[in-house]
Amino acid sequence: MKKRAKRNTVITTDTVQQFQCIMSACEDNCCRNSGWTISVDPVTYAKYKAMDDEMGEFIRSCIVEEDGVAKMKEFDDGKCPLLVDGLCRIHRDLGAEYLCTTCTTYPRVTTFFNKRPECWLSLSCPEVVRWVLYRKETTGILEFTAQTRVHSNASNAKDREKSKVREFLFDIAKCEKYSFMEKLIYMGLFMRSISKLPLDSEFIRAIKEPLETYRGNLGAKSIFSGVIDRLKNTDDEHRANMLLQLSGVSAAAVSHIKKVPEDLPNASYYKLMETFYSDVTEGNAKDYLVEAFDRLIVPYVNDNAYVFNNYLTYVLLSSQFLADTDDFAEAYAGFIGEICAMLIFTAGLFHENTSLSHEDMVVGIYLFHRRVSHSKKIRNSMAEMFKTESLAFLLGICRGIN
Ligand code: SF4
Image (tube, rainbow, N blue to C red):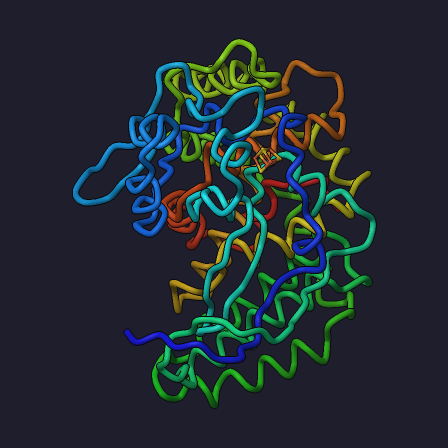
């Protein structure tokens, strides 16, 4: 597919541009212990190959080539050998222009929806979690024009309609008249109503009416009463089973690390994570998970709704919501599944606490996004689990959250 440079609309949030990495002050530096593959792009690799000094030799000794792709070696002590005292030697001694694309951009990410670039920050970085979620104003979506490389094919009419659906979900996430739970319900009612539309050429005509109706009713509360009553009456045993099943899905998708460095400030949280996931796989988590969710998560979310209102907008953007599917019910189920799984993960991690602090929640969110939901696999499994459940049941997992 041909690409060319042109002025293009870029979507981002108002928090993306001013983000600053805190480098050596970071409690879980992304160059340590990540277990991620750091690929080295060909242009940067050629620069390293052209260096005829000791530094060049050292950098090349840290890289392996597999199937023609260059990447940083995995090291037994859990950290990139180029990291010294929390600073990257390439950055410190040669300058940022010598970093590979992965290291230059993280935690900034650019993806494309309907051929339009979207820039966001990865929630796998603890400082990003504090920066984008812990501020009182609800995150706003920004649009600006910039010179970008774009796919030359024009977007098709159906993708343009899907963009409108996505933009409407951003509007729901921002709606100040709704609580966190009401936003989830309104999104669910809308997504389930449009999931019944024909997906052929009729779609473009058929989507207009529900979009207009739901836009017109945004902010009205009367629509919720039936769902909220059913949600309050969710069967306890079924809810407990779903909580356990969800934690099982994320346990299966967790990426373990070979060795957590003992001097890592957040090393103890990795131990909590390992313990929780062995409890899940060995069947012990059922003794405490529901109680921990109700005791820790429910009051925390209710007391700090602004964090989760920001989270909604942010996950819609960063999950590339609707980019890879035309199935609206499935996309919604995966989205809700991911949010619930993050909350369950945090409850499991801190089940021995009497309450949750802001920093506990920061750890729950960044570790979940770093260790569990780095791929679409988990979202797809959650969508599979949830898509046949009723909306009231699905959200009944979060019973008690306003
Ligand atoms: S995890 Fe975030 S704050 Fe920490 S070193 Fe990486 S980019 Fe910087």
